[in-house]
Length: 117
Image (tube, rainbow, N blue to C red; front, side, top):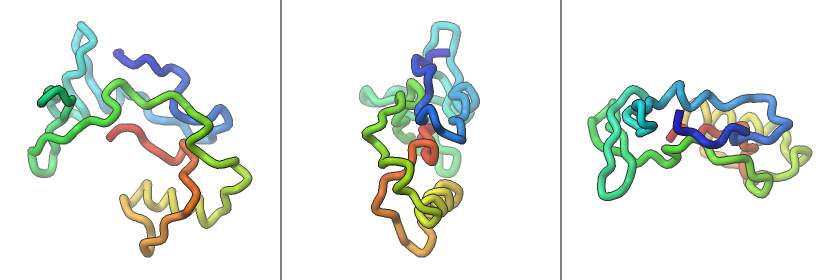
């Protein structure tokens, strides 16, 4: 409830799918966002925030209305991506850092990104 982007953030050719925003967000009957990753939500100085689990601090929710619609301008042509680039982004997605500090020059394919931050 509350999300307008029904097409999703990934290219039509994507092999992966983004998690349903309802799996990490909760809305009340009026459609107001009330929880993010099972933590309370507040509007602080006009910014939608959730309370972090690790330290209780408030953190901005960058995409409170769900993931942005797909935009082809945000990624390179699929044939430019080699296994090394793919592996680097998938490692970073899983571990939160790039292996050995190496970050590819190409932007990630959108399907390698999550929008729940």
